[in-house]
Length: 211
Image 1 (tube, helix red, strand yellow):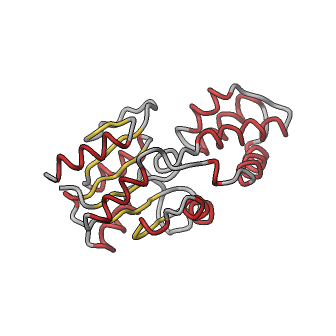
Image 2: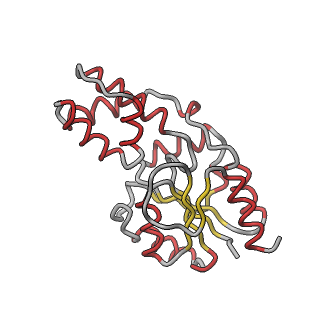
Image 3: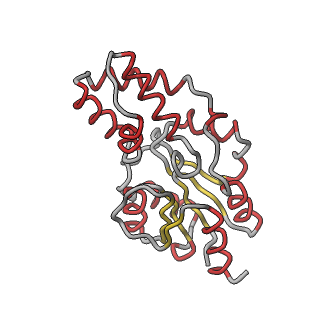
């Protein structure tokens, strides 16, 4: 039975990669550089820092300057144009209605995450949120997930992490919980279920729980 969902945020709950890609394009242009949008998105899907380091190296711009211009450009993109993926809201509501809980563990800053949740009226679905401001190492270290499990006395067998990158899945493996990989991005870490649409996960949870 699955009762508890631990979500990643960008690229999992919310379709943020188009906005991230656009911000990198604009940030590079501010520095007199350019890269194809498809290449930028592929890098960003691994991590923002990986994208900064790789783009800086390949274009010859300073990583610190690119990080600054990217952040400035990204912060100017309204959360309203970074929507939840189809089926996310229905799945979060379903878990709550069945007596379960939703959580978030993300490398995103709290202010940025709360902006997305408020813009899309999703705050009430989540029992607890851990962001980059919390004192835990970044995934794939499982420390943040372990902290949620202890804080809320979660049954590991009833807990599923949903993420769109290997580091999410690896962190969940290390914490001893089940895993769902979302999206069509490249990955090597095996997950209990791999989906490209949340209707698939919703149906899988219904079957797992015998509803």
